[in-house]
Amino acid sequence: MSKSHITPGKLVATGSIVPELHYGPYLRDWWIFSKEKTQEKQTYYPIPLRLGLEIIIQLNNNPFIIRIVRNVHSSLQPGYICEGKGQSSGINTSASAAITSVYQSVFVKSLLNI
Image (cartoon, rainbow, N blue to C red):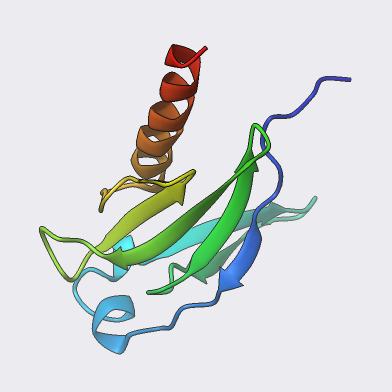
């Protein structure tokens, strides 16, 4: 059995649905779709990316918080901030980019201090 370096996230803050974002011209950016496949059909469930949503995850036994905010380049699109071990990503266009920047900053610094 392999060891996982990522634990499931825990909800810290639910955030809120903002009508101008979730039902406006950029609504496609504020929703993701989870799919469930049965023998007969495949069903998609819409999940909103709520403004102010915060999730905490553990990466290599270190807590990282991911927060959904408004993007700095277009306030109608989502932005993502990741914070961990005193480092912050600033606002990114994807959660992945935010997490990667903080993760690399934290663990590259720790490797350099060995």
